[in-house]
Image: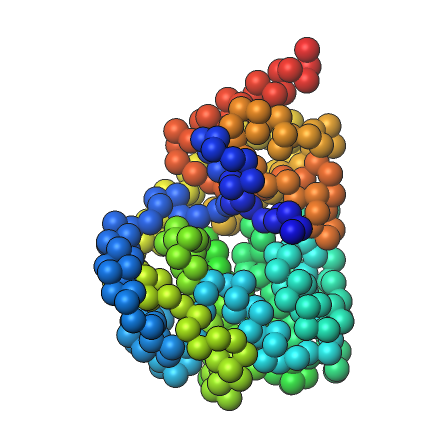
Length: 354
């Protein structure tokens, strides 16, 4: 079986106690209420899950301010991407580069031709109006990640709105992956929910995995005004995509709408601290709005391995299209955990000078 290249694969390291900076979650961890609800869900798992996630969709709808009919729940963002690709069967699609690799995998698995729109490091890997100029008729699907992974850069709200309307005019489905949006400083400024009615070809992808630190439970959802598309997505996979524990946990998470904000507030000063200290050590660091940082050094192409010797795991980003050796991503964790990482990085840099 091919080795998994995503962050969070601590299982490949055996029984070692690893401090994982390769997967980016809410630094506060899972809310106690959510963990308790998941345990109650285990006790209720002697029956099939609700295939329509009725209680969960009602809870999400109340928080999101949309109709439950505009929501589809799935087994994490990756499963929803697979369903989207299977339901749409696009011939031509466009993704950013660098960005989350599951977009291209899901599309190519379904026979789609994938076009990459490369972001430039000298322009901070920002999405600019250049993207508007390359959108053409015949493009079935455009997938954006906001904030982008692994760069942590956000797309300006006016440009997002213009891209949405451009895709609507071209009959191009626009999927905006907002998995990390609730943990960024600009969440309110880039809220696309008001455009769902105006642009039925718009779909917003959200993940409780990140905002509520529950990756092992696997839960995400789509917001979309095109009810026919949501019906096709529901048919593009098994009927019981969300387990009973995940549904229970999701309902409980919606009862803590403040949790992402608290995580965002906890991460912000630590993100600034990590940025400053990495730059002092000689790394190039891109300013991020998210709970993770992309940094680079041509000198350290084996940094992941060096830190792993110290029981710290970071994300090697050399495999992202548009990046290469020397690029890494780290999660913003707690102050104490970030201190351990910085101390280890300083040790590695001193060894290199020795």
